[in-house]
Image (tube, rainbow, N blue to C red):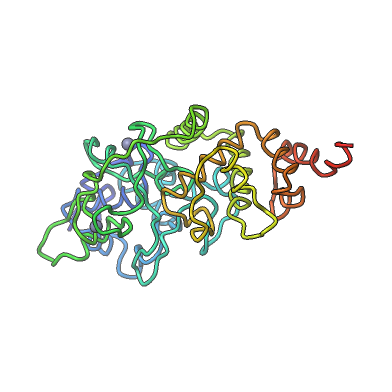
Length: 336
Ligand SMILES: [Zn+2]
Ligand SMILES: [Zn+2]
């Protein structure tokens, strides 16, 4: 296609609000009437294997620069579609492989996505004039849509496969034109027709805390206080999912709130939990955050967690957290 070699492409869609790089790339391909693979081969050449890795996480600089110059979007605008733009905000230690703090893993294996790394809100997809996937849908603490007050989905409700919209094009024969982003790549189910499940919270305050955080995430308005909160919340998630028999923080909190616990066999990293388990766990974490001093004091007194657990393996904790937990280091001394 001649137009693709020129300085600007014939189709120059800009990224939509909170759009994910891979979504933007697929929309651009389809806008040109091309399949994703054909489009990528034409513009990047066969040497550049774009889809055999998590492109949203590992987008190379040349790709961002190319997309920016060919669409007329600013470099910053293009970069913002990548998960790398979350560095220093949601995660702090960049890693080429393995898990990344708060980022859902795609678990790529031979180009197949075996994880449930990309979530979606069916109501958003159904009401978008131009359906697209959000960057914030890759984030583990994000389990709800604050616009539609419903739960996100982390897989196709019809066949149970994870979302991999770019793969829809690949399964069809060459003569079939590009397929909608909304189709499940495996069974063809229209993801915008997935059931809309209302988000029900433990209580009003928890819902408020969670919704505020997610709203700021989706509108790129995470502030410094959130950055620090998220560090603490991630550490709390590790404590709650800990297999250490001396750490019973999670059971203790569930008991105190009168809510059922999620099955212990799902325990691992929060980034690998399914949507329901994450939604549950995030509420417990949010509840603890609302009055962390009181919550942790009670937990330490009940011996379900110790000072050293609160501190251990926590890289670069916020100052306020350190001074808060310090009070529990010699709790017994204070108690007497
Ligand atoms: Zn929505
Ligand atoms: Zn499906």
